[in-house]
Length: 160
Image (cartoon, helix red, strand yellow):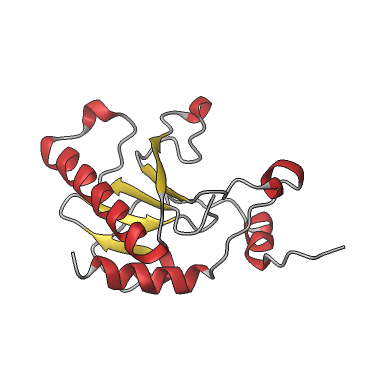
């Protein structure tokens, strides 16, 4: 029997539920690396998913704590879309992504883990990446350590 080493999963399983919103940021950038904040825009920011569906799974969120699209102003809408486009470019450059799943889970019943703060998911995909592991073993294989992916993405974002 082969073993799959994924030590970050135990941290997720054993961690207490967070009291605050993971998408609510202050103006200080001192904790950006620890929080996996890849880039900050004028009205929104890019954060890595700490427990990703695939390597390089990113999320773009407005700074304002909003749950509904109708509450976004024009600047937020444009910045969210602009950063989502930049995420796609960065993931192509850094991870050689061949495709993407991009989407919003609006509301808890729609699958939102954080239902009260809008965020869009950008999940890179590759030919053949849906193998037997998620189907039979309920396990995702992430081929690169999240800290290495973070470093590469921050560098890529600084060039756009």
